[in-house]
Image 1 (cartoon, rainbow, N blue to C red):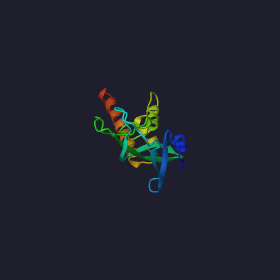
Image 2 (tube, rainbow, N blue to C red):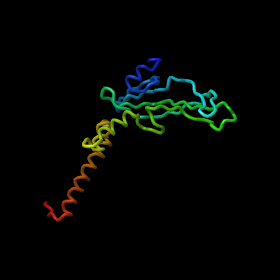
Image 3 (cartoon, rainbow, N blue to C red):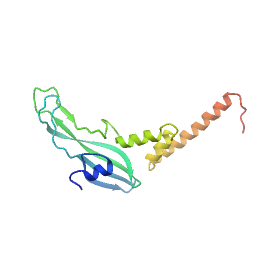
Length: 166
């Protein structure tokens, strides 16, 4: 694994991250990548005192497929504690621009879905099938939506006075 994060940056578009482990889940075909930030120091934004580590929290995110394999990132997100007893800020977690707080998708995955659903492009169901092609529930939901859309079109035609055909 690269120590400076350059491989992760170019592969996933996540600057300042490093892969600490990987696993290919045979049952689903998913790549599970354990990632964390390279930066190991933080300062309190309120008082400026250097923070101390306060553990980690695992955050599971979906990313765009790599070589047609779905990717799951497991970010070991650092928790920090302000060392100044008089400071109102007690603890916080690290952040990055590529992953929004409480996100389940990386920013580039969210952007790709939004691009595909743009004007004149794919429906939300088509975009979901393109990103989560490996998940059978997505395909089931897309079929159900397609069926409901056809029924809604039929109901609209009948509501304007057309006769139903068998």
